[in-house]
Length: 147
Image (cartoon, rainbow, N blue to C red; front, side, top):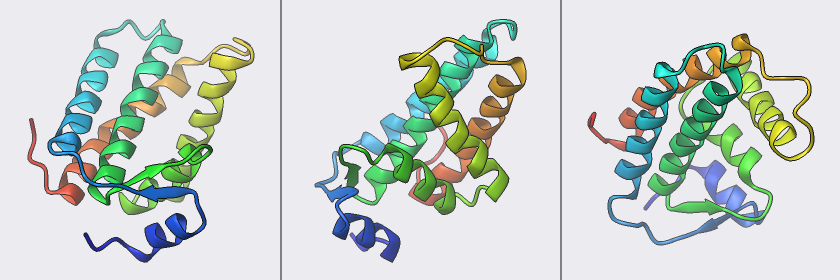
């Protein structure tokens, strides 16, 4: 597959690795993203950490779908690079990209370091908004039709 130059550069620097595609993986990742979004939409917004976590996992499924489309995988510390690269591919605004990168750091902080400060309703709602925007963009980029 012909990849954008940016992906070739990330392979060359060791952030990504070229891989053989897995049949059905792009569709599977996007279906998972839609499922995470659907469940996040059913949870009471007062459970902001749970909504945030589901939306974060959904956004990362979108990232995985795009990486699979371009036949690459992240290496040890490539998750943030992958998020930033896919945000550019899916044409998120610079503000949305910045918010998603912050959500990645926030998720790692609350999951692995400290539960404080708690995730706010606004943080959770913003991540749901971004996920809702990413899914159709990823479907268009990868040529996948809606589930």
